[in-house]
Length: 317
Image 1 (cartoon, rainbow, N blue to C red):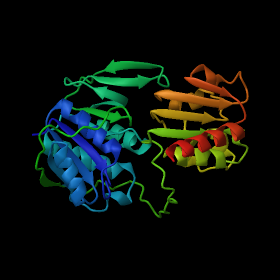
Image 2 (image 1 turned 90 degrees about the vertical axis):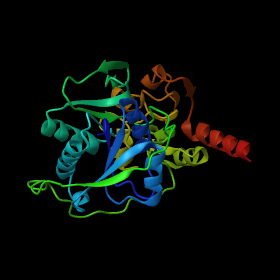
Image 3 (image 1 turned 60 degrees about the vertical axis):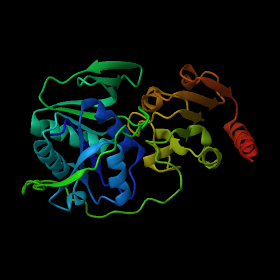
Image 4 (image 1 turned 120 degrees about the vertical axis):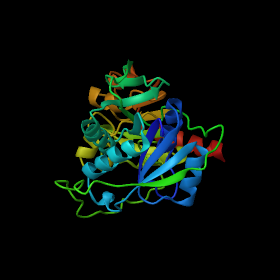
């Protein structure tokens, strides 16, 4: 019987850093199992064993990926029953939080979102008010559900590796009833950059780029960073909405966040305020972003960013 169950949706050829973080935190809660939707590649199975996973649960149905959150929540509820887990951990993405909410209803379980750490007794440390405070919370229900923010813990394999067993979970026959089915998909262009929500470095541009993200992208590529944007930039059509950082976009918590030409309104702060180091570049010395920046540069981003890019490339040789 597992104490913690981690949900991993379509792991692909290798586990993402955020999945490894979930597995690291889950071990604090006891014996760990995973519920996977999708195929389990050899490298994925090896990584799960290295992180101490004892059981891999797979759904009896292979079409869960064709639906939105409903059937996945039904599968996860069945996996909780099969594993006997008292804690369920998911990513903090919009879809994962919807699955967590639906799972909470199915299990009458307490749901805690925006988690940055957990303790052995199930107490969660939760980031609130745009990262301004960290609170502690603990569910009083037999099962607790946690959605965990990325980049909050350093992934660490288990002291002793495990050889996970595999088990199939019967997905309820009516799981897809009333659920929206995905009618089509389009491939996202491959940039070679890390995923925004998991990146250790993010370079973001705002209204100040005036439609030209070239300097932002060049600096990001020099640093091996992801590219982000403010809502003003995405609404203007200068970059895709999947790059939006903020209250209505992606929440990031990188080691380094470089803000270029972004005023730093509260909606933007809500998505990046927990970054470890914030560097702001803006021509307006009164921009709110300087209130939370660790380092501020008052200047033209079209001069500052290329200089930084050139210096980084020079030092890299």
